[in-house]
Length: 77
Image (cartoon, rainbow, N blue to C red; front, side):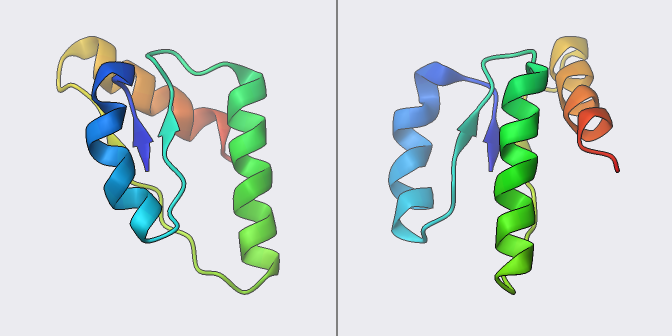
């Protein structure tokens, strides 16, 4: 689960942790290093036979839409 707001991560984390789902708090714009680390985790899960889905929770304003689009762009093969 990719999430924009660091201030609300404490609300979301107990739910994702319960199901052993990583919570990736991007705090807005995602760095290349951060996106690479997430891609490596996804690759490792795939190699272990774990099906992976990415859910993004961002504001619906232009900044949130741009941030979500950048994540997708950085994680394309």
